Amino acid sequence: MAKLLLDSDILIYFLKGKQEIVEQFVKHPPDDLLTSRINYTELLYGAYNSTRIERNLQTILEFLENFEILEFDKRGAEIFAVEKARLKKRGTIVADMDLMIASIAIANDIALVTNNIKHFERIKDLRLVQWI
Image (cartoon, rainbow, N blue to C red):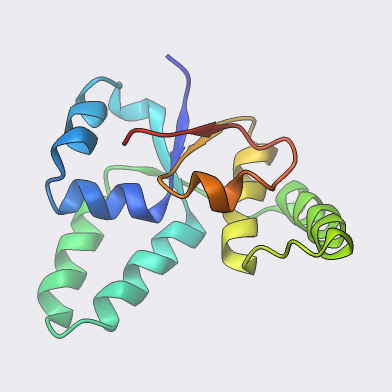
């Protein structure tokens, strides 16, 4: 099987025990499921923005230890800049953090697993997978 980059919504669905997502997780070798530093940041923000900060932070940090975390590197930055300019010219802006996640997936030649297909489908060369 191919490696997959898991978007924040998919990680959150798993943590909440959403059956379809849990079933998809077990179909893949753990080493094939990755996430990005941007998604890591989004999950940390969610914990700090919650009413149960310490508990949620502990859960998230322990969970994220199971994943290889892909960084936003030089190649990702170049893809981001080119794609942001292209999208702006078309009038179809994507939030910077989402565009960074997409750029990391493209730079690493892996598909992004997300439930936000409509949002991400505007990004050129991004392969998307939907589990729900």
